[in-house]
Length: 94
Image (tube, rainbow, N blue to C red; front, top):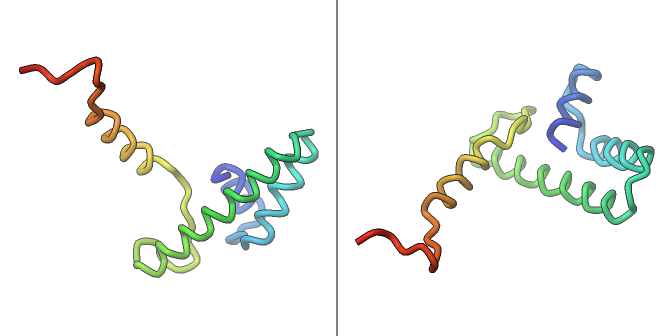
């Protein structure tokens, strides 16, 4: 979803509003013949991203009129969780 939005912004030269974003995702996936349930899920994800961005702006983490372009921070956070994960089959040494 983030890739699609980056492409749209590069093409339109302005921030893309959430309604346009949802329509673009719907049209792109429908045109490619994706199953209806996948299209619906993708449109829901766009809504989640939009809500997170609104929260980031309210908290001052994301400047006004800007948007998230990468999920790298999320990936790093998940990596830390994975490293800290303790498997019952592989107890820590000692």
